[in-house]
Image (tube, rainbow, N blue to C red; front, side):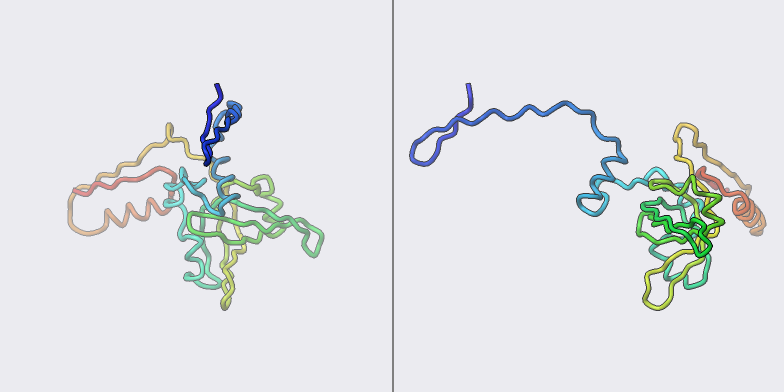
Length: 199
């Protein structure tokens, strides 16, 4: 039997049955996030780079939101995701690109000149996560931009293979062991979390 609803005046009306919705598998996380951003303008439940947080901490020396503070003409290293790519030709007819890079706190336009573009065109796609180094252009009140000097793709982290580095230092006088560890880790950055035990 169909459900009924009572209207003002004592009349009754039959309600049509609710349409049966098709059974569909849930969207993958990145698809849900992309669609949420398209509809409401920001990521609601998570960020597409959430699984890269440790890599960002290990490799980036600043965030996009802090580029202007760093200053015009300074270099910066970011780990960011490409949210848009626009390819054009330079004055010599060679392809180059403008990429929109995004991290947890902002976006910045990056210029990829022809030589760098030619070497990296395969990784300059929407959704790719890259480690980039570039020179900041932040003049006057303009939004900062980045002229990219190097590009390195960042593989998606695999929690099953990630290992931590544990360094134990004996107690002693002087800061030499800590300086040595700092210099060693600076020369050999990686994706694994590091733990220092100083007794």
